[in-house]
Amino acid sequence: MSHLEFQFRITPLKPWTEILIAYLSEIDFHGFYEEDGILKAFISNTDFDELIFNSLLRSLEGEDVEISYEKLEIENRNWNASWEANFDPVEIAQQLYIRAPFHEQKENFNSTIIIQPKMSFGTGHHQTTFLMCEAVLRLDLVGKKVLDMGTGTGVLAILSEKKGSKDITAIDIEEWSIENCEENIDLNECEFIDTICGDVNLIDGKKFDVILANINKNILKKHLPKYFDSLCENGLLYLSGFFSTDVSELKTLANQVGFKFISTTVKDEWAILILQK
Image (cartoon, rainbow, N blue to C red; front, side, top):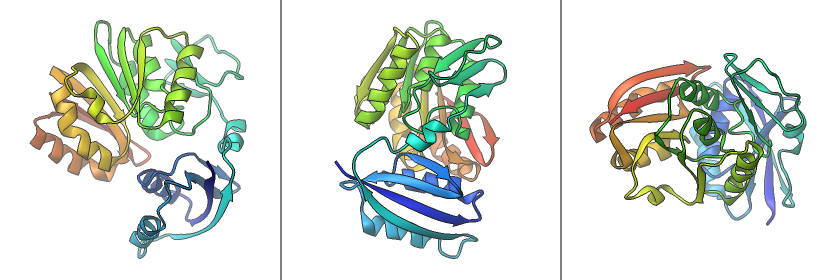
């Protein structure tokens, strides 16, 4: 399968690089990295819809940003190779150290997670993954059933096992994400994570004590009723993958479904929302 590589020049880079990544993720782009001030983004030829792409760019007209791009066709390969070469470890509050297999271990952390960096989302570098990891670190998951929806690298599922859960389901709609997740599960010698490739319908009829969903706003909005039905009474829902400006809308929708608002935290304009059934 061939892929398309888009090279975006964005002025100003911040915060618009992160904003554009969020929008592109919603239309099936995956794999992002910055190089010499250029954002590179990738999508398979079969997933690319030029009308939707052009509509997205038009929606940004009038904003205080200039975006130009070059489109290239490439053969299927590891499109994050350049990003991998610049992968740095992530440290979260001296409690969690997220590193690649080629990084040296540090001993002054409570937990370490090894991630083979084949995708840029789900390593702890992105603000939303960082926020989710911070939140999970505060949980005692002993005896709890956990769902990691949109698992990506599997970092949240792996962290959930380290926090005591022995019943974890990790779901992603992309086969390559599940492959990377399973590789990382093996690297971290986890025993209690079941991986499934598919969509949110896979959770029908199942119950969880904690649901972790770091996806994007539009998908989360669609999933909220499913999450509510699949949570045990008093169960917790952790949502991220959206901007702080989206919190009010998600809180309103969650309240309509039946959720109780617990808290929200913001990091560099990205947010996490914690809800309870």
